[in-house]
Image 1 (cartoon, protein in one colour):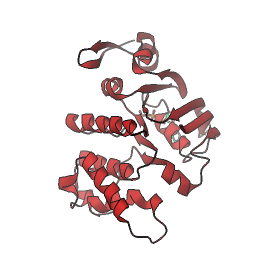
Image 2 (cartoon, helix red, strand yellow):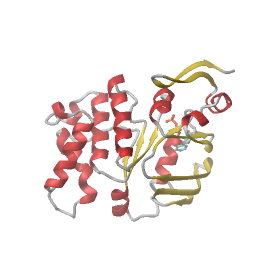
Image 3 (cartoon, helix red, strand yellow):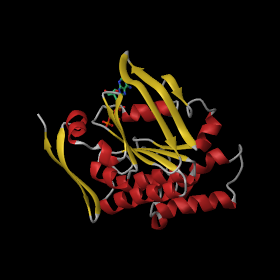
Image 4 (cartoon, protein in one colour):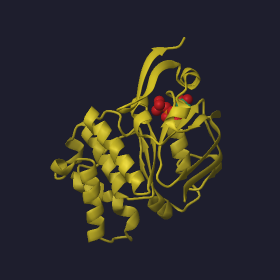
Length: 252
Ligand SMILES: Nc1ncnc2c1ncn2[C@@H]1O[C@H](COP(=O)(O)OP(=O)(O)OP(=O)(O)O)[C@@H](O)[C@H]1O
């Protein structure tokens, strides 16, 4: 089952072509790492897919009406501003908004979804705290939980593990694996290629606004791709403890 179809997507910002001819299909049960150097176009691609940036070409999500889009995909943006001094639980409950009619109070099913999201992001001991008074990493987990509470077929997250401690980075990636096992899919931008190699079923590499590679990590993270798209060399082996990827040197 296709959760997202993108064909020939292009974006110009201030008359500069930032994305060109991006095509991408996402089906059920995938953890897709969107990777690429700074400025490659990852954020712009996800925003265009969601219809938040004017674009050429087609995105099946952007084509939906806003209410339907909120039930089809959840979005955790890179910017992590929390504007309101509300509790963690209240903020996570906002993730249920696309499932509620205007003025409708959350039902037991909504509260259960909120509890699942709070558990998945290990926020049980923070649920009554004021979200604006949490650390940066804690706030990131709260915003991730809000997106998880939406319980959409597709979850899109822009660098959700940046700033998390190692245990919570691993837990978040394991959470994505668990969601994929339930038939949901995740499109996640990442700079940590080690975690991308271990947890993503598929990597989409952007370079200069184009898809430079798309496939399983072991097929994508070749020496040539790492040189051309990232300007690095790396050590990448399948080990008894799973795939291990370590960036080594800058290629000049
Ligand atoms: N509002 C804007 N106006 C003009 N150019 C922009 C705007 N936003 C982003 N860009 C440019 O578009 C390109 C892609 O930016 P984007 O934020 O999508 O990259 P990214 O791959 O997400 O980078 P990073 O890894 O640093 O977050 C960059 O060259 C950036 O300078």
